Amino acid sequence: MSAHANNTDTAAPKSFAALRHPAFRVYFVVSALGMMADNIEHVISYWMMFEKFHSPALAGFAVVSHWLPFLFFSVYSGALADRFDPRRIIQLGLFCFITASLGWGYLFITDTMEMWHAMVLLTLHGFAGVLWGPAGQLLVYDIVGAAQLQSAVRLSSTARMLGMLMGPAIGGGLMLAFGPPHGILVNALFYMPFMLWLFWAPFNRKHEENKRPAARGLADIVPTIREIAGNRTIVAMTLLAGGASLFIGNAYQAQMPGFAHDLGAGHADFTYSMLLAADAAGALVAGFVLESRGLLNARPRTAFILAMLWCCTIGGFAASTSYALAIVLLFFSGFLQLSFASMAQTLVQMEAPTHMRGRVIGLYAMSSQGLRAFAGVTVGLLGSLIGIHWSLALSALMLLTVVAILMAFTVRTK
Image 1 (cartoon, rainbow, N blue to C red):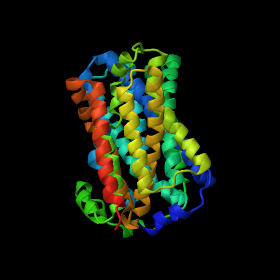
Image 2: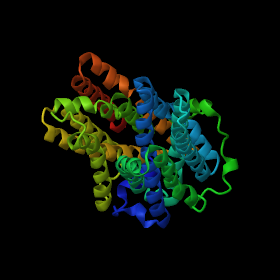
Image 3: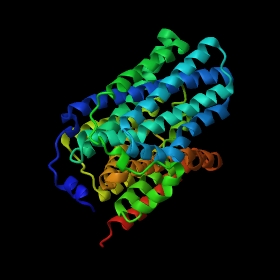
């Protein structure tokens, strides 16, 4: 393991270490607002698409168009962030988000939306996310450096969860207060604090852009894989994130109405909402609790153990017949997921070669987010054949096996 990782092991933990950086405190707030706006757009646009078209196929396209850009373009996005100022790459992503919100608003107000319009805007929204992702992680590194990187990654994930929890509530409020067409126009304003702050955000790689290799699109993927193939930690953490996304991801959320019905909470009321929000609440609590105590330093073995415990909680939820137990298990699954995912991302960032950190982060994003496009097959399609409880439990068992193999590969005695 590299010196970076060893430093992580020996450094004395500090509570909310990354928040000691004034710039990161601002980043935490504005990125949470940006993620909230992202989720508000989902709430309003998905509702309006349903009202207009009643098309399950379009709803499916919304999921695919959100994740496929991460699969095909994350490494390219990371390469751009290596080559150019990541603040400008993030701003380009935010511009795409704002354009999508304004486009939805125009189509809703004029009542001119056709299905192809919706598909274009959904795709634009997906590309916005992939532009923000790797560049955002590089900017976090530039702000806090290696010493507080784990804290920054964990708090960034916490900000993301905070935005995801706030988005549906604020989105529903905007629809009630202004109506969906004007509500989504108001939503565009929530991206602006992030957009404007990036003009003054700190950046520690000035004058280095021209020293870095040019971005080559999809052609960057194979050289990046070759470059990191000898680093057991990066390979294992990338495969861990990819396996979690491929086998489970967040596909069980789409099946939650079925789980809710079987648990006796089949109505669109508070009990159903609790099931939807339980794992996000667990992740949010994990971010604050772990940071407040400086717990769980980034180590591969710890990441694997947490991931295996996550598999057990997901499998337990799939087998549960008690609503109360299901809520508890979902809460702990969210807690564990944020814990191991932020740890894996920290280890990848710390082990990544400096000259290609963006590409390595992009490869990690391709694995951890892009493969979510196929989780609907492992959980959803298989669930249509053997039932969603069995399909989710089987997916959790397969992932548990993969994680155990990766753990043996990574931490065995050399």
